[in-house]
Length: 405
Image (cartoon, rainbow, N blue to C red; front, top):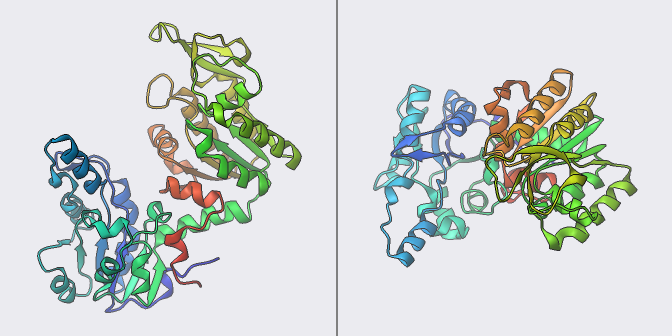
């Protein structure tokens, strides 16, 4: 189902509420990574070029949850670390134009905003009504607003006041340019992929990925490559010794069921053939690559091995659509990032050879960026949970709430 875009409507003189995702890492008042801020620039620039008055809104962390924890432990709580003021300052630098910030009378600030002007609201999650999708808070957010724009795909799987509730109080609700791009790439991959279509899934838990795996099998992905710790649940279910590797014992029957579903659907399911292991009693000096069947009780698997990386890379050759979500190993600890980086290179090479590639999920995206390959990937998704839920075929409240084309 196609949604109306910001480009489909007249914005001149309109007051436009743009839900952005500025949930960025901030340390000591300094932004450590402004990727998400830069990602929203096309929509913001388009709106002001069209003569709109722009009100920006985002969440940052979980301030109320952290406040509650601090109160329970009797430790100090610093609300200042959750303010979006540093983000407004960084956005001002990027736009080379002043971005106003919410003060004591936000209604008056919005009413007096000039065409082309930008005002940022304070962290939405300072208000309990945001995550509760409280109608009164949503109505408050909608006050003085002519057009609602959702450009925060990463929060679209949550029915919050700023992603779903507000749409009941604003007549025109559309997708921003970043949201539009997400829906275009992910929608095509899910509903009308060019083939061969290959999906690569990794991460720690198979339970997190079951709806996606089953959706991809049902929609006849041609090849399904599974790496990361989630692969050990499959191996143990098959009767292999996996040592002290991470396993979800209760998911073993499901793993066997997934293998049967793939076989019945004619989907080629590939699991690692070798892995990087350490001796759990001597992890620092014991790293080695071994075949899966040679794993003994004292070993811990932390990454795919070189044979698997080569097999997975070969499986991508000639592909036309690639979706990748999740790391191949304990990516955050070198040298166990090698498998994930190898896959990032293979996906980039396949893209160079004509495939449309979509990468989502924090560690997969981090690997692509770390390897300097971002410009060789067709689309890097800004959603974590939202990307997974979309690929699982779930309805995202923040998308469903937008006007249809």
